[in-house]
Image 1 (tube, rainbow, N blue to C red):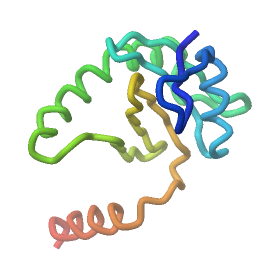
Image 2 (cartoon, rainbow, N blue to C red):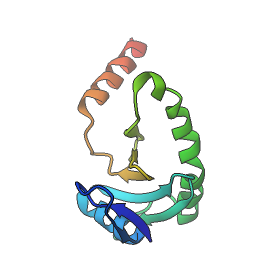
Image 3 (tube, helix red, strand yellow):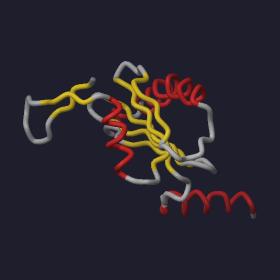
Image 4 (cartoon, rainbow, N blue to C red):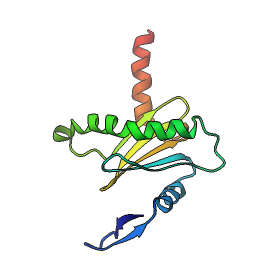
Length: 135
């Protein structure tokens, strides 16, 4: 069970279990393949693949990765926050998935998305940079 603040109502909250939160995240978009929920101490609270989606990794690989990746990745990102401001979302495009880290006040949510999720400007820049080295 986790405590979730009520939007717009200062000091009020309600409890929701991590499974409910994960199911609400899956409802955001059908292209979300996987959700991991990590607390502020980097403890893995939930790790769930969307039903009916072929997994690319085993459950053990997912749990191991999302137990160690957030402190490494997010601590590195945090080093630039004094200069760039607070981090809110980080995405990593792989060939087969897009991995995303989102920060909420008390949790880190890690997602994998189907690869067709568009990041047009970033893709345009990355392709242009690759072209420089092909010539």
